[in-house]
Amino acid sequence: MARDWRKLDESDVRVRPGKGTRPRSKRRPAHSDAVTAMVVGKDRGRWTCAVEADPDRIVVAMRARELGRTPVVVGDIVDLVGDTTGAVDTLARIVRVADRTSVLRRTADDTDPFERVVVANAAQLLIVCALADPPPRSGFIDRCLVAAYAGGLEPVLCLTKADLADPAPLLAGYADLDLPVVVTRHDADPAELRERLTDRVSALVGHSGVGKSTLVNRLVPDAFRRTGEVSAVGKGKHTSVTAVALPLPDGGWVVDTPGIRSFGLAHIEPDDIVAAFGEFVAAAEECPPGCGHRGAPDDPDCYLDTVVESGDARPGRLASLRRLLASRAGADDAPDRNSDDQTI
Image (cartoon, rainbow, N blue to C red):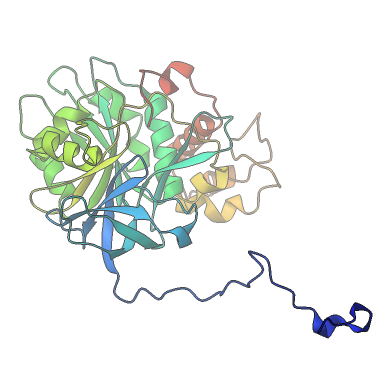
């Protein structure tokens, strides 16, 4: 029998919920069975990972949906679930990214507000610079030092081709920075460098042509093959335009990066650099707001000069600090900052 519609009320009407009205649970899987791995390469939305940082346990992974657009870069320590056997045609999922202990960042240039993380969790940054052919670029070295100090990496200056030129003139400009230096020659084994890199994660940066690839091939005898394994992800590509972590025979990793054309520092503030010079940190807090700590005429009321006047810091240290600040501000020579045809 038909019901009189005039006697119906809302309790008689069944409303079917539409799509997407069901509240989403905030609970996420605990992934208690996840294994820890280090990201050693990235290519086209896939990450190559070394399970427990073991170079013989390589797994290809994708980013899990719950991570959203969380960036994952070479050097990151991640948790993996799924198929972590590393067998052909298998794919694991990255479900967590651990907090980073250090980051090497850059921007496309000094006006670009978008920063890019090149390498994560590296203990030191090896700044590779040739003493000749091509000639050394102090501006580039300064900008790498700024990036290392701001990112929490220990900078190490690696001078190559010492058989072609004397390193003393270049080193004189960095004497007050107490900067670790390793000098290599084309005709000698880099034993000192190898010892410094063992059991550590180290990032290498340098212009094209400075001998960085030669160093990597000496440090990692099968570097060419391993680079192909890490970067190809089944496509047969044997060179990379992104950072690639390679295992050292005696332990540790070197993160090789392509030759750099431009190292932008738009993301770095002056206080990030001052923090690496402990004797000036307290004085910097007394400076007026907006002080760039570069001294007269740019910052005439900078308080850092008082530290030298009191004898608590060497004049050369302040001069070196201000040179780095000037480099960060883009005041160094443009050719020192921009060269070659590849960027990281």
